[in-house]
Image: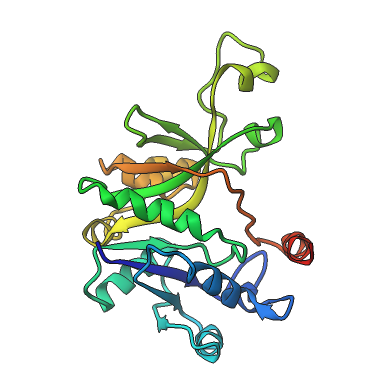
Amino acid sequence: MKILGVIPARFASTRFPGKPLVDIAGKTMIQRVYEKSSSATTLNDLVVATDDKRIYDTVKSFNGNVIMTSSDHQSGTDRCAEIAEKVTGYDAIINIQGDEPLVDPNQINLVAACFNSADTQLATLVKKIKTQDELFNNNTPKVLLNSKNEALYFSRETVPFLRNYDKKDWLKHHTFYKHIGIYGYTVNVLKEISKLSISSLEMAESLEQLRWLENGYRIKVSFTDSETLAIDTPEDLEKVLSVINR
């Protein structure tokens, strides 16, 4: 199994324009993501996929691999699919979030390990929810699993609903999982799902992975204990800096 890591990176961002190039204690965010991801032992190669010349030049400046892609893509998955068309020789692609400068390389390895099974089509990570704030935060997608550790459904709502218990006691009576947004795809499946139309469930929840489930694809799930810290706003940058400074 030959695996390519892809870091989608775009300059345009509604809440934080230009964030891949923001300075984080002397290095750009995209460099930090690239260097951390390079430590993942399961990746045969790693590349940044971008539509911006500034990001392209920055990656080149620290001797990283980078490929220019279309500016029309709606998601990182679509950008990964273009890479799958441009490069050959890989069996699977891991989509690594470009706004997580503290990404844990072991999380990449966990997703990659899902493809040790020949019937894995897609893969992702989940983490056990331990606090009430996470459990009832609608910005935190939750995941329902089947007995084969495959995703049944993703929702911004708290699922499942525990009918017979007060909400303050839900964590005592059921194990809830939140989604960690790193994806793996076999190259063939990636090319297929990139051609799918937006589905009704995806539109309802604004979660692209529901498109895949609604079209009958299976998403294998692996478990992590590591927390992720994405930079979506300038305020998030301060949180990452505090971790690095510690």
